[in-house]
Length: 371
Image 1 (cartoon, rainbow, N blue to C red):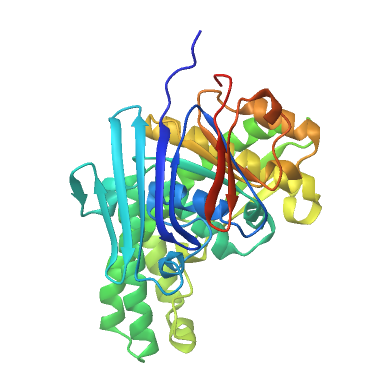
Image 2: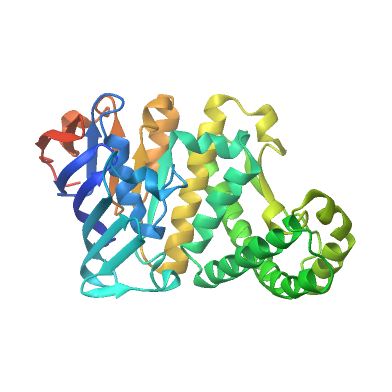
């Protein structure tokens, strides 16, 4: 029986993106592998493909870093076969005026109308920082994951950060009283929406993480994920009271000390904090399980199967975990992976292989068997 249809990226064209001057890739089948030495441009290609989902890089906060050195503009064009929209072309341009996005012949003017239409999930070596890194990094990952599946979350998050920035500007200017109260009235309802949607999203991700973790790792490594909100009570009255109680401290420190911009979440392994007890291999398994949970979240909330972008991560797994990871994937999903050497099953011909050298495609080999 043929595999069910899932969204697939069929052509990726990149111009002046980091070290990629002009690169055009035509994808055939469901498994592509970009092979080459470090620093040749493999990850840059995945980054460009992943930008399709939320117009954000999975590794750079400042989009200006994506433009080739000395250049003024970068561009990405993607041709896709989409589960709901059929054949679709998306063009993204980055420049001094910001981002410009076209979907077929329609220019996108509201981010909330676009984010999540074309889901991708990135598996990156940097994901281990989600276990042992900073709360800010975990919040950024969570915001990107939830915004891509919940337009209401993106709207609430944008409103919250606008009000937070204005409130912090007033605090830095030494203002207080009625002026701060005016922004509190905007901050509180948006913040409560953010907390409520994070609570629901993390609960779903935790369930997916537990299920995926059981498939990747041995049974004694039960994986968990827990939300750690800054505010234990998430209604408007409680948030307003917390802001009022912290106002003197806010004025002293010149910034807002309470709210969802201080939230965090924590991984656990067999009921214990993973950052304290998990080995390197266990940490890799945890973040792979989290990404698989994100795949399920995308499919449930958008009805679209994401393209999986695996950046040099599978070679770091032991053979048993690698086998379990591949077995946990929906075989109908497209996988675009990178590595410094070919995967174990490359000789079977199921991978379409591209050799990347100095920002160029040096050679391409089509798959010999249908994936």
